[in-house]
Length: 308
Image (cartoon, rainbow, N blue to C red; front, top):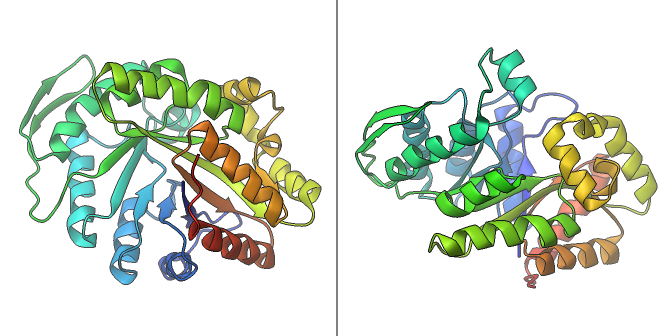
């Protein structure tokens, strides 16, 4: 199981581009398996990935995730392929429809029929990323065009999928899924079996299952969980996340994060690999000292592959 890290999170304040580049450089220097960006309506994730990718060679790059609603499939295909051409084809493109409140309130768009929106979106996006000319007319999306981009290979595409319908779509049309707020039990009994069955039925390769979670190597796990509850307690108000917490038997995000000393964290990451995770995106948190301890340990652990 690859161990990577999230960069540019900026929980307390937005990060500058220079700071994000330094985070990526540190991830590479520590031996981590990749750098991932979430879309937080600050610096554009794909642009930041390009800048960092040019500054830090070889390290795999990814988005977890960028939102589909504000981007026409042709626009996202063009941007993703440009990142590929600029960075030597190191991008994993994680996408998702987002959440009703953000799409309707922040973007002023209708969040009507998100599952159909996503299926149609992928139906157009995937061939565009493979350089094909697309003529697609669905109930929601209408796409006519092609995005020829010299030097660009099609990126791996992951869909943020938690519910059964979205997991089926991810297995049938994408290359895997990237999850958030999902514990070991949920990965083993819900995420991995459903997306794998859908991929098998569609004759597609085994899907990637990427787990995105806060993590802290610490001698004060209770304090770390309190920090998560204080900063991310509202996650339990999002219906899709609440459903995952219920599957896990958890009350909220503080119950599914990975916190503890080095021995405990290593054991938990082995459990995720055994459950079917192919990559773990670490979201380090807490004091600078705690973040450094966490990333240093994870970089060392990544050098000794964790397999199921």
